[in-house]
Length: 518
Image (cartoon, rainbow, N blue to C red; front, top):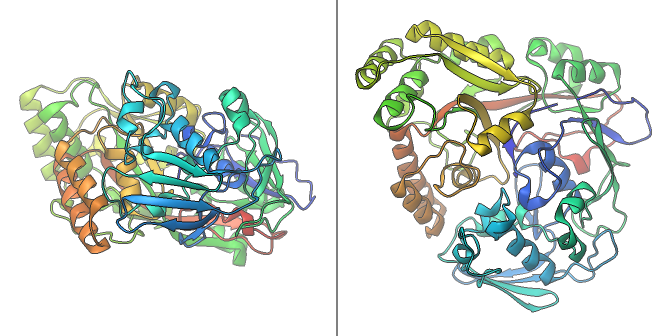
């Protein structure tokens, strides 16, 4: 989702057992506007407050939510009818215009929304997203009546209908457009929960929306997203009964959490990954030299050893740029041996890069210290240092927001940790968000026109099998280009308190919040 994997965290909860489910969280990067939320601390809240045309259940299966019908004969022209009498929490009615206006706002370049790329397939996007927009609205969106609108895509899309439960496609009430930043601080949605309070860096509280008529009503009395400075503190609160649901067990407890929690321990492979990125403006990492160095670093990382020692086996070595739980995943793509530990080959590639421009300085990996990443980032840095004989180091910065702001501004100046947590369960969701040349969430400046073309073709493919073949071709080129350095995919380790009778992790590693029972 919305959301890049950026586990963050901030102070312990109050422990009061008022029937409200307390769960770990972190300070969102931005105000809670769906089209500008692309990390999971904001995303986990936004997805509770809004209802889209579709929603995803715990397995990742998409179901109609506000959509009454989605009609198409060619996967290019769509006629969408929404259910009647659905209200925002301010009492106004959700209409077709609520969707069209929200999508147009998200696409318009002058609004600088982080999720604008999702509207790329719609006819007219290029006009509204140009540096100097020549239109304010996309010509491919048309309101037919209060409950009906049409969407015209540039080419057929195999993923478009699946994507319609993703946050940027949520509707917005008319009041949002008067002051979007203020709206994001006090959002008005149409989902299973209503916004209650946001105490910055402390907690966000939501209460059930009694007027929500959709397929995922709240089975609890509300959610309290408590912001922690460390997962160790959160885990201590979980054990003490002051926290009901923790989606990430700290590294220090991975060998004991099953014994500690018994049947309250949760383990599940999920669609999440962790990568090391580096932008091309960092010295020694542009062009052919940068390619050789990225490949060398990848082969200098002993992924299986790090996974065993740091995570007690609860990760899977990366084999591509998506996640191993996704439909169509192929772990044996041509060139995938670059993800395997090979010290001799790593040294050889590093020497070839030195022949272009001798190495100087140190290799630094920046990470957010509020996200439980210290141990594995230090292990990666040590693996690189010991294999290549260079000065490699881990660089902590206080918050995830600090890292994301620097990455988005292209001022980070070092390698950095980043990841992706699926928004809907397709490989193209991972790839298009991060590696399309024009995506706002392309963290590493990756730009290959042939890969863009193959992504387009994969989206327009007549069958899923044909789409998977084209995705494999695209990823083979990405491996050759070493777009970034995939490190591992997740096997989530989580837990619930003894005050909670049901809490399930969803396919993407977040809790199925609506269905937590207490």
